[in-house]
Image (cartoon, rainbow, N blue to C red):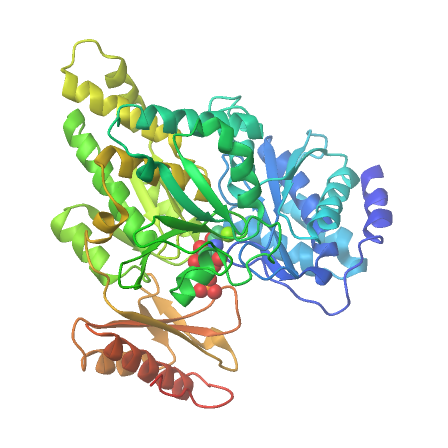
Amino acid sequence: MAEFQEISKLSALHPKPAGLVLQYGTSGFRTNAKQLDHIMFRMGLLATVRSKKTKATIGVMVTASHNPEEDNGVKLVDPMGEMVTQDWEEHATQLANADQEDLLTALKNIIEKEAINMSQEANVFVGKDTRSSSASLSQAVLDGVSALGGHSKDYGLVTTPQLHYMVCCQNTQGKYGEATVEGYYTKFCQAFIQLTKNTSNRTDDQKHLCLDGANGIGALKVREMESHLKKELQISLNNDGSKGRLNHQCGADYVKVQQKPPTGAHRINPGERCCSFDGDADRIVYYYTDSEGTFHLLDGDKMATLISTFLKELLTQAGLDLKIAVVQTAYANGSSTHYLENTMKVLVRCTKTGVKHLHHVAQEFDVGVYFEANGHGTVLFSKAAEEKIQQLAEDTNVNDERKKAALLLRNTINVINQTVGDAISDMLLIEAILAIKGMTIQQWDTIYTDLPNRQLKVKVADRRVIDTTDAERRAVTPAGLQEAIDNLVKKYRQARSFVRPSGTEDVVRVYAEADTQESADALAHEVSLAVYRLAGGVGDEPKPLH
Ligand code: 16G
Ligand code: MG
């Protein structure tokens, strides 16, 4: 085929460094930007083939999220705006690692295996974050698409969730919204304004939010969106990219890991409501500092709790019998799970780490609220649930309370980006809920109290020696490790601990929680030692934290 000759020629312009092996990890390829040019070209090829296979538009987002500025990466987006399926992640890895002279064979293998009709049209949407390397890398993606004769649309600078949204809009013929950034702002901001419309006692203080944009794309897009909010939300934007470096001592990951406010923000007043986005704006955490100067983090678990409580109340008021569940990972604070199951009486499910796993489980329910503790998350409504809510909102024969609840539910659906966790949409949802409930961030924070916890990492020769089960909560191998963890956990109160190989870094992660910070720290250290001794630790033995 003519296209294949073209590919040989063009791929030589995007050569693969000899010997380089990269994996499509938890959410795409991610490494130093200098090593990614060939990956981008090849992902352009793969997205084109995927588009032919699905007869739909596919998305390619160039970003390395919360990684440092010098890194970059790429994420593939499937037709409904969800992450690409696992078997295509494998194709991506194969194609990425084929030696230059084997590239065509690797591509043909995929085409054959998937029985692709190469005469089918292909459409690919491309987006990029603000990294300096993103411009040329997204051009490499576009080159890959055109090498196979596909059509592409370059959205330029967008957040990752915005690109997911565009792909979904395009493939649902505009039913989800218009596939433009304007369409995105219009949809989500209108819903936000509708939701907050009857909260007339909302003070100016409550309308004010302090936002750390991580010096990234989220900051740029919030600026662009501001006029659509009609002053119903007034955002003080810090780390807007005008001076500081991307993700450097700021952003959601920094705030969550360091458990402190970002640098580069204005002096935060006691009780002031603040939030941080990550580098591609698919993650958000909230926080405030109290009058004693103590920092309080409201993470994904707190957001899941606030949102699911709000939705459950509305469903009850609306008299709708819809099944709601919260999906978490092993990292969810034990207090949050306890509160959700025992006080809220909602169903809680636990999955492996990584948004795609949570997303799939959430799809099993009428209303699936999913959040990772680190701030990735959203809410999914089944088609049936959306229809029932819509019907009730239009029904003229229902009482005022049910009607009001149905209208709120309908607007809540519209403020949520259901394709993937979205910092902008999550922020609007949380702000609306706090406004409707007349709740301060402190009140939200006291719904339950987090158990003290600690995360550590251990370097081992080969992290694959650790195999886990039960949504990563138990280690199957190496022999004796789980038993050792069980015995250590027994020494402490309200304690829990697990270990898992990281999907993004060459380390084993250790998590521990217990009734006090000292106990959580001691347990995390002892479990780290067990990993070091039983799973082939390298370097110095882990030292106690105190
Ligand atoms: C990726 C995942 C995130 C997960 C993290 C775990 C997405 C979009 N991102 O960043 O959900 O929490 O990996 O990293 O899925 P780890 O395996 O290194 O602990
Ligand atoms: Mg991210």
